[in-house]
Image (cartoon, rainbow, N blue to C red):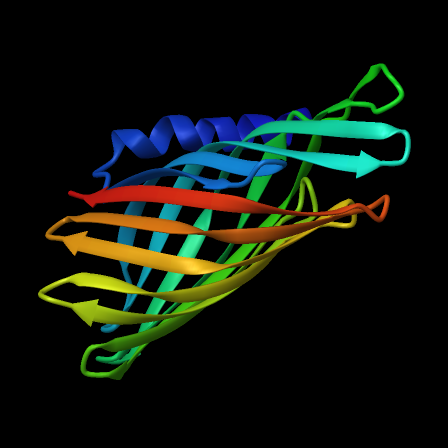
Length: 228
């Protein structure tokens, strides 16, 4: 397993030295779950209308599992790298998909007391689609999977453009694994501004824990990126 960590670390060390095309950072989550990340990426042009992006990321994931005997807290900082393929089948549609690999140093603070270190590596899969439905109306969705924590996520949104670039609209999403599942219902606001991009998500999340406990809490997400 150590050689996999070394490969990911080497890629992360080398890519920022290249002509970086974009960096991004953000946080998303609620009271009992969250994900913070910072990402660097570099593009490689393929045939017309297609390109690939090599990315590296450092992130921190956490979640809590409520059970009859108490609460188990999971902390999982990690490093990852991969490639994303971009495809524009038309002027109104953008599709991205690609694999990667991550390694996470997972620690579990057990409900009954004690701590377990459980480092894990796994594949990363992600894909998105965005389509201009009407002149100022956009629909989009995304799927992702983090193999180290077996975390799955899916989201769908409809955004209406207001003014030159501001977009806002409803969004529904699901994320989780076999220990906790989260359903989110809220809104997303996007502000593309030149080479910068900012988005904000907020709403209500229903968390269903392995032990049968269910809670409803607000969630919040913010992300920024900049192209060079």
